[in-house]
Length: 436
Image 1 (spheres, helix red, strand yellow):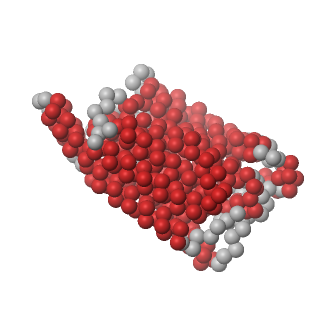
Image 2: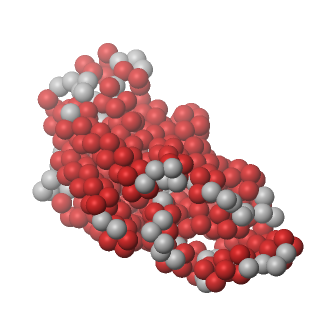
Image 3: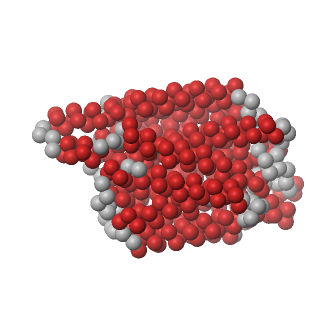
């Protein structure tokens, strides 16, 4: 297997890692702000159920499903570098839409803005994930993706803190004021004032995204040819005429679907989970940061151990087992301890994307962009799986619902780590490369 088409100097290689790391930081900040944003929209738009508030994640992550394949077609025309810049530009537009209509308390338009942001991220991720995977040897891709994950999760830890300081500060006191409002007019005025707090943070974010788009175009980031950088053994490559003829990829798409679902469940739904125990909003606003801090720890572990001490496949298996253990522990405990086990799922989830993505695209050759797009479509799991929790948590015991959703997802990930990643792969060299 050819490992890479990048032939630049070590300094250029490090520069490329830094540039892509910056991108992962940015879309980490934009993505993980959705956790506290759920609490914001429920209050600002006076929503009566959590299911309606969870349309935030639904609109955001469904964009990946609809835009991933078109993104691959765009990237085939623009190349990965210009495609990343385009994705940032689209995200900037969506951020402006959300900030503008949030001040008007127009929830459908805000959801449209989130869909646009997700669309830009779909283009950005369809380009950046395979790019970092093939920038060096495929067998060490998980280590490079771990570096990207560190950038992503540091931003994810910061985003709820920034959101809490700028928008959700003293939210419990404000909720009490809204509940005590003497007239509908007073209540509306209070909610309008609260909703307006989101405007300038999102306008600043839009400006940063636009400037980054220009920076990427002018950066020394090299173009990589995925078809040459990620080729499989010749016999397998010549006999396959469609990306759908790679079973390990298709099983990987489902693996990404359930993985992102439980990742978002642990990070974005943890605030709602905590509030179900009666924990006050001032505290639950920051719970997403705890999950992402656990993920950051996991990425650091992955960076130190993959592939030197443990393979990508083995790290995925260990992570899946931890996911099952922490999910059961969350069910068997109560209050802050149970929330702590949900946050610990961040540790279990950390090494999953770095392992699943390179295992799933290994050996795709000229189908790498389309395979990447299918995997990005799997991110729609972040739209659907947490929504199941939001809908059924008020019907059945919320802890049981959480366990019934999370445990089967982790068990499938375990299957993929043990068997699924190798289904349809031909030739010992290819399997050895996949195992790392």
